[in-house]
Amino acid sequence: MMSAEGATEAGRQAPPAGGEAVPTPGRAPLLARIPDIAPLVVLLLALGIFFAIKSPFFLNYDNFLNVLTAAAIAGIIAAPATLLLVAGQFDLSVGSALTFCGVLMAYVADKHGLAAGIVAAILGGLLIGAINGTLVTVVGVNPLITTLGTLAAFVGLARVIADGQTLPLNGFGGLGTSRPLFNIPLPVIVFLVVVGVFYVLMRYTVFGRAMYAIGANPVAARLAGLRTGRLLFISFLLSGLFVALAALINVSQLGAASTNAGNGLELSVITAVVLGGASLAGGRGTIIGTLFGLLVIAVLNNGLTLLSVNSFWQDVARGTLLILAVSFDQLRLRFAVDT
Image (cartoon, rainbow, N blue to C red):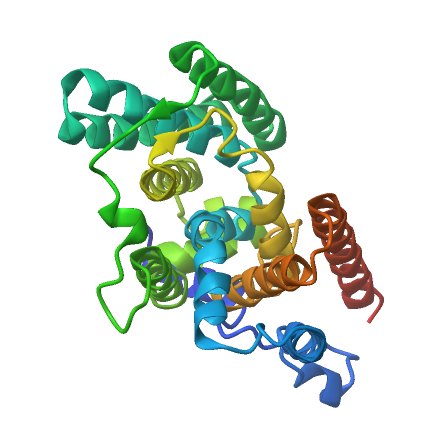
């Protein structure tokens, strides 16, 4: 795939996977030693203390599992989204892709059986990933425009297939509701396994390091021998595959496929990834940071729900978090340039 020199150069381009800040000339040594996730840890602790004081139900094991369960679907999708953003790419179609895969599964399962429905959902996710990847890497369409287009197209297709209705699905509750270990819901276990897989992928493999190199400097990455188009195409395929997995879990939890299932999901995913320290300019980001970003969003939503805050205000909170995260990212980039 690439020469030894290219692999070495790719490794040099990549930041530490644990989220530590990279020292730069002129930067204060103390600041350089502060991990990027430190503000998130402080924010998470502050939210936990606040909601623990305000609600007697916040600090208990069942509610902790509720927080993780709420983060599971977005988290499964946010893992490949982190990989894409590190490479300087976007996938805003994840919400409509989840809706499409879920509806496709329920529709095919009703006519041809559950196994066929599962296969259809997986193939549907791979199809969306392949379309996005082809348009971006072969045709050369901007990833933002590409995935905005597929966002609209596939949610429309889902509504056509379902005729605008919710499609019921029986006999598929195990994936979304079973608790096989220490009373932990299976979606949480799947979520944590996915996080672990992408942690290893991004930190210890040439493929993961190549994503950092592409995001940091696409031209240099190509000159180093990286097949950037092929690698980005694979990343979009991974995004589609894990969206399909999340769709299967969503359908299993609900016992039905809704044409509104993925509404706003792309906002939660992008917010978590950027909040976790991934740069919109590419070349920077970690799975651990994304995990903490997901936990901040899930704890905030959970706490507001326990305090009976109107759900519309939760949307306001998520939007505000995204704006703050992007603003912080821009300030961090400006600081790095100035120093």
